[in-house]
Image 1 (cartoon, one colour):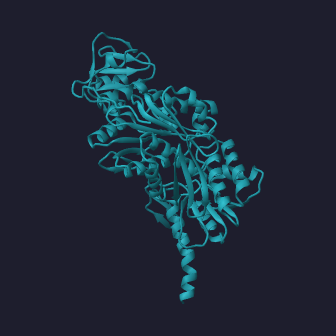
Image 2 (cartoon, helix red, strand yellow):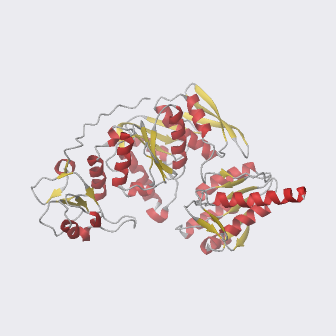
Image 3 (cartoon, one colour):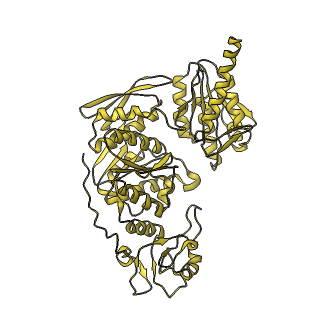
Length: 501
């Protein structure tokens, strides 16, 4: 399945005609405006800018409409807004969604870089960052030069930077423009539900869209299950008519969306009929082996990242790569090259005699996948350290507690999270619950009490530039993993010192 070639005919030097770009807008002046720069921050307006007044959405940004006068006083030559504003000396363009218009304008000013570098979008409740990392590895082995925008890190073809989950419209356009300048062959982008809600990717026609799964999560942002699903499905509206849609055949929600795509479609899965499928041959604490099949082709994959959910992520990456004509054996080699990712069932091994995984899982569904893997690997107990519930609702915390109580033997909860503590206490318990002072003590407790045959999952991990655990400070990209490694090393080192002594 090959992707169509596009041609960029944008004029990079003449500017962008707002009349042509915003054909459905209500205009307050017959004066034509050609935009060469724009901003949504009235404090950053410079003479000659177009000011875009964004409405508040998901509590992420201040409403820009009250600051239109300040923007014009600073030199804005036109205003794009969603409601009439009290300015008359410059043209205003009233649009249905100023965020969409902002994205379209930023992309147009940058010369529509998506026409020169195919943009591959990965969305879903879980697995987005992992699929991007796998794709990056596969495409690199195939001789491609990919830029990427992901929560685990960004690359513009010339330099690496920290990960971002919701890029702003000008930032996204600038990054894609640099990818084109650097000669990138593809752009791999992670698209979160927040990014879709913010219309962050407006103005881009995706060359491929992959939906990893759609579960009942993030309700604190989207209010209801159906509104979250409807939001996720909106990404298909940004798929190029000739672009490829990749769906998870095992996921009952996303697989129903096959009928919403008129162009080419590819499915992946492990349970039913899918065009790209896999079955696990063997699974151990430090690796798993599975077979990927696509048509008459098949390839064995041995990976140090374990769990059924990782197999699904590998299939998603494989399906996308196959749509670009990459050989299945090379795809398998690219998957195997990714040995670990921060917080994705990341194994911490200091010779302790039992597997310890640091995992970002903080929802009921993601914890279920991680703890099921732990249960399969365990011949003793499954010990789970629970993470910070953050903005989770009480019902979501209760769902987490229910999963942990069924799949773990011991749950260690920090007293710093009283709502989660209550949720665990209220659930039907199979697991024993230990309440400790803070997360550092919870991790230390799990590491200290685990024995051979046990499996420890430190869930809800976070990684930040600087994090301190009591007197132990980690200048970290790893965070919980670094602390766990420190504690495991101390545990293993003590018996060795006694033996030597």
